[in-house]
Image (cartoon, rainbow, N blue to C red; front, top):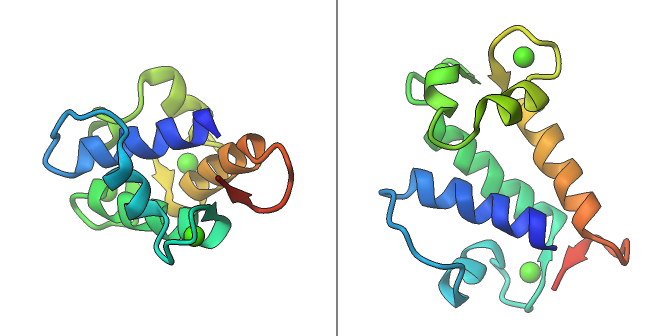
Length: 113
Ligand SMILES: [Ca+2]
Ligand SMILES: [Ca+2]
Ligand SMILES: [Ca+2]
């Protein structure tokens, strides 16, 4: 849970007016859309899809190093850019963040409490 939420929080902070604040209830509420107290795959993916759209400033469907610079360091960028072409497509981005989700979901029930 920790890694996935931290990444989500990090992305949110860097896209939403860069307001530095600790992970709080409001942050959790943004992810937990149906307010059932857990973040499931579809909620996480929806959040990350909108985070990607916010980061993709020129709306070409991929993140350049410049667009990702505030969110990912060089190592994270390389890890996310699966085919190494210097751009992160939405699919590469989602593959990475959903792998984080699966890793965080230790109970394997498809949701993070
Ligand atoms: Ca939920
Ligand atoms: Ca772009
Ligand atoms: Ca790529």
